[in-house]
Length: 91
Image 1 (cartoon, helix red, strand yellow):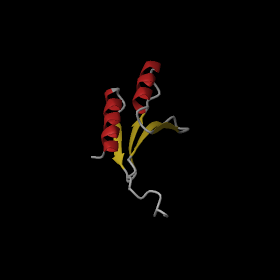
Image 2 (cartoon, helix red, strand yellow):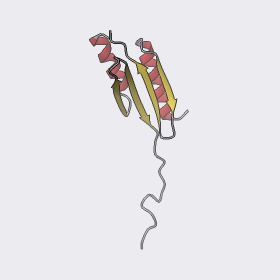
Image 3 (cartoon, helix red, strand yellow):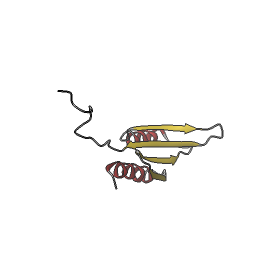
Image 4 (cartoon, one colour):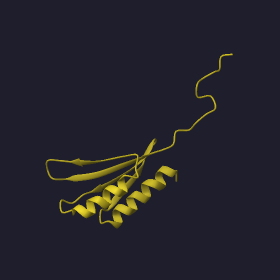
């Protein structure tokens, strides 16, 4: 599993440990984590959840008018580097 997948799996596991069962998906350029957030989440638990998702490259909360709330986090995969990043050299 790429490093992004390991990081995303760790985030998902920590969210699940906090009572927010999380699911993880691998994509071409990133790994993502999603978890449903209940309305009854305490302030202290919110702080812990935010500490967990802060380890991701991006995170957010999707809230709908039906009171559904989905927390998401994305861990980007490393971009491969080459020795010829700038193109052919001109001498």
